[in-house]
Amino acid sequence: MQILFFLGFFLVSYALLLQIMRFSTYHKYFLYMLPPLMMYAFLAGYLLYHFGLSDFFIWYVIFMLTLFSLRKKKEKKLMGAMESLTELTQSDPQFVLIKKSGENSLKYFTYSAIVYLVIFSISFLYFYN
Image (cartoon, rainbow, N blue to C red):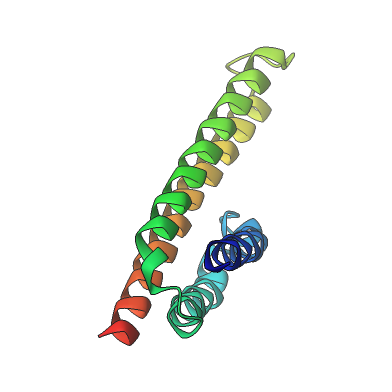
């Protein structure tokens, strides 16, 4: 039963995290969304401890790392497909802008994922000890 509760907790926390990260991956909003992302990571770490799911901490981190890496691979693949399908040439300013925007989104996704995992881990370990 505890495994099902953990899976439910994980899925809900991941869905909410993706909604926050939807804004934090835009370069204009990254700094503004950093405090809510950090607060959510702190809350998720506390709730994992509070709900008595301490045994699943490592699994939570492993699942998050796996999903983050799969999502990043998918985004890179989509960027490659977009580049091959576009009618714009490499020297076209619009193509350069689209490519730079995609690269920035991936960069901020990585930053957001690192911030989330670090704050989540610190929060959980703070309450666990």
